[in-house]
Image 1: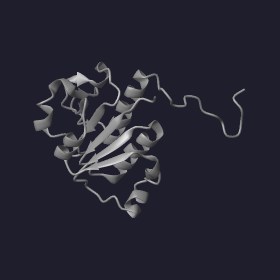
Image 2: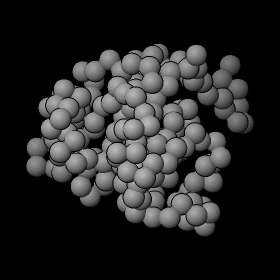
Image 3: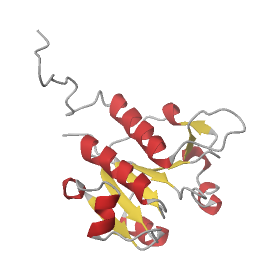
Length: 166
C-alpha cells in the first residue's frame, strides 16, 4: 500500500499557489484538502488559468472552514508555520497524517498553533526573512514524508525520449 499523505490548505488566497500544490499532489499521490473560505473561485476557467488541467487526477475534499475540517477528519495533524519551534525533519510522519498550511498572507491562526506546540513545524530559514512560498513549502514537506517511506510506489528512474541510457 502506498503511503497516504494529506495536504491541507487553509484558506488559500492565490490560485497559482493552489495550482502548484495540486500538481505536487497529482505527481506524488497526496490527497488535497481545501479549507475555505478560498480567496478565489474553483470554476473551470480559473482552474485552467491556474494550471489545474490535471484536477481530474486528484483526490480533493472541500471544507467550509477549520471547524468542518476537524469534525470530518482524524489526525495526526502537523502544522507548518514559520513560528514553529521544531524542524520539519525532526518528525517521523505516520501513515495518513495531515500536513496543514495556512494562508499565504497570514499563515495558520495562532489560536490553533498555541494549542499544539509539539506539532508546529518549521523549515530552517535565515533570520529576518519572512518565509518560503506556500507551494515550495508544501513540496518540501511532501517529499520529506515520501523520503521517510523510501518513495514507496513512486517511479524513481526516468527515461530519455530520444536516446537510451544504455
